[in-house]
Image 1 (cartoon, rainbow, N blue to C red):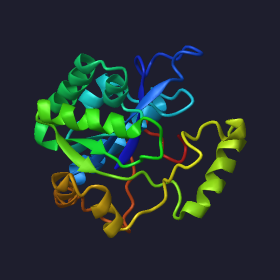
Image 2: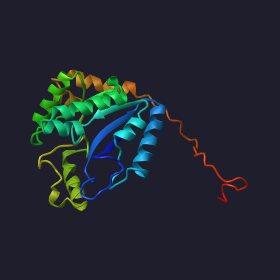
Image 3: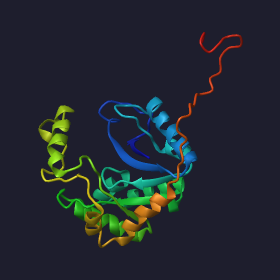
Image 4: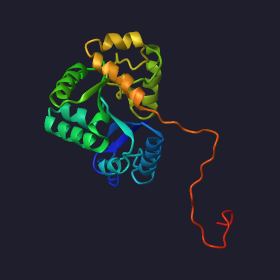
Length: 231
């Protein structure tokens, strides 16, 4: 799977101080065909959409959409950013786009538990109500940036080195994006059993079998009478 960067306009737009803004979308391969779709999608994101980061847009998402599961993140997705601004119409429009692109049965809204992040619990409450109103499936998830809570300082250092001096990129001094076990997940999402069950449904739906130990080369056309080495 890939945690994609989605261009704020199109992946071909590359204007300073405007097109460095981007949102997120997660796509997972359901099969080997889906895996090949991911390769096409990320190749295009690098060759066509690269601006600070590899980027996709709605055009490329529609073009490369075969055999994928879509998860709309709870942090910095187009849908969640719209709900944060109380723009339910825009959030619904993006959900409709994803349903049309991947099939309603393959689209999930990510539900996360971060009461230590200011405003996040209220935003998740909005997401739950939105999912009920528009018959969208929730999936329980937890972003993991480090294994233990003690490792948070290392991420703070990384953000500072990247230019976020003083660690301003962290949403809260008490944030916790460490790895959680099943017991903790069950406690966090005890009021949303269907969101936990959907984790297993996604696992069961991803059956990409990739043959290892075999070389795959692109089919490159060369002029007649010329060898590949000469070309």
